[in-house]
Length: 125
Image (cartoon, rainbow, N blue to C red; front, side, top):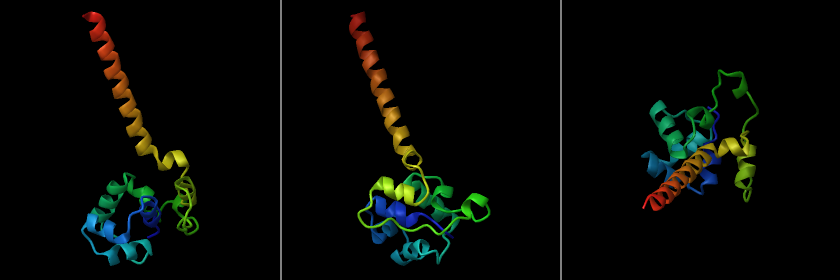
């Protein structure tokens, strides 16, 4: 099954061995998944997607959807930027980093709320 595992793993500078340890599988399993020679179990697919904070269908192409029938995805070249890697596997930069953007937005909102509350409490004193 075509997937973006290598792209996501290398974008985070994680070795196959490190990812295998985190997923409790062998390095050979990660290698085989990246080489499209082995389809992971559904629990492993979800675990991998959760690790990279992406939906399963972002990590693995659904062969039954027309949008998934596309040329083979190539790994980003060595030294390619994260933005370049996101574009290389067909995601817009914003889409590739939506989870991080959402978390940052929530953190900023919490800080604003905390800052507003502290100003209100100072005025109330």
